[in-house]
Length: 226
Image (tube, rainbow, N blue to C red; front, side, top):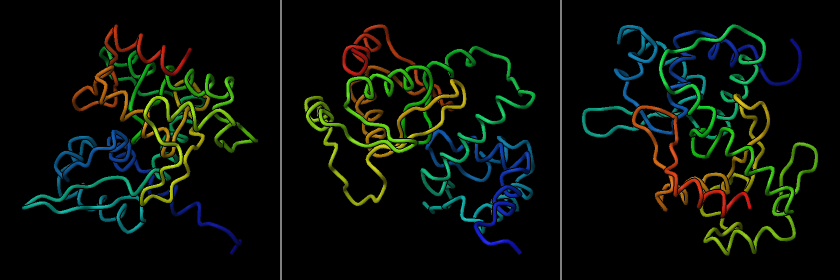
C-alpha cells in the first residue's frame, strides 16, 4: 500500500452520480433535509438515506437536528473547494449536463460557492485586489498586501478578525466556470455578507445564483473593482 492520503476513498464517495448531485446541491451553503436531497439526486428517500450515511461516514457532511427534521450540510469550506475544483475539471474535460432554463448565463456571472462569491464578477474582483496590492499571490498562496488591511477596514471589513475560525483570511478557489481563481476564506465570506447586507444583490431561491440590481452592480464595481 502506498503512503499518503486515501484519494480513492474520497473519489468513490464523490463519484457516485446521486451523491455528486447531493454534494452539488449543498454548494449553496444551505442545509437540506434528506427528502430535499433525495429530490436533488433523483432517488427514493431510503436510497438517499443510504447515500447520506456513506457521506457522513466519509466526513464530507455534517448533520444538525431541529425538531423532527435533520439538516445536512457540507463538512466545511475544504469540502466545498474540492467540489468546485472537480466541477472545473469536469467542465473542461467531459460532456456537460445542461438543465434548460435561464440560469446558465447568470450562474457564470455570479453565484454562491458555499459561503463566498464565485463567477465572473468574483474573478475580476480578485484580479483587482492583486493588481492594487490589497492581496499578494505567491504561487497558489494568497495573503494580505501592504494596502490590504486599510482598504478592507475602510469598507467595514476587519481583515484580521479570526473569530473562532481557523480558516485562512484569504484562499485561492478555482472557479469552475471561468477556470481561474476567485477569493475564498474569511475575507471571501465577509465580502459576500457585505454584498447581501447592502442589498446590492440577492440570492435566488433554491439556486446558487446571485443577482445584482443595476444600482447594486454599480456599487459593487465602485467598491471592489475600481
